[in-house]
Amino acid sequence: MKWYSYLICLVIIVGAIFSTISLVDIWKQHSGVYGEPISIETTADYTTIAKFDYGIIEFESEDGQTYTNTTNYGFIDFDGTQGNYALLFNDTLLSNIEFMAGKVIGTMSMNFYATSGDYVCTVNLDINIEFFDGQTVVSLTLQNEDDSVAYFMQYMTINGAVFKIVERGAV
Image (cartoon, rainbow, N blue to C red):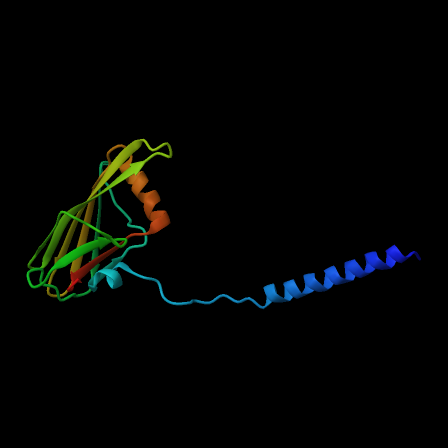
């Protein structure tokens, strides 16, 4: 054999050793959680009073125009007159929400846009949360304008639907 054949074999063996070391490093990796996610409650000093996790809201409709969902939850002790409250939808603060004794009402608006950036439709979800002695009733109503129900259902398929009533602390 010629001397350069030995050199080529040596280069291949050294390359194989380095590749094996790299594979061992890859195989030793494991998944884990480092730290904890930062939630809006933590950053804004909110205390969660009630949480309604729907996943996907299952609406019912008789006329194809008005879609409703009424869900009963267990008893939650809530008096909307005793604190500084806010309503969050998927950790987004909602405006135009009124808090009263034993009741939360308001409308959530969400705009949808095409991939070109053009406006498509607006979803206006009417929210009515009532706190009774034995149960809590959450009623949601949605008007289907410009296929807004289809856009909202697709949004929930990706992001889910979680409502939270929070009390604002000293910020």
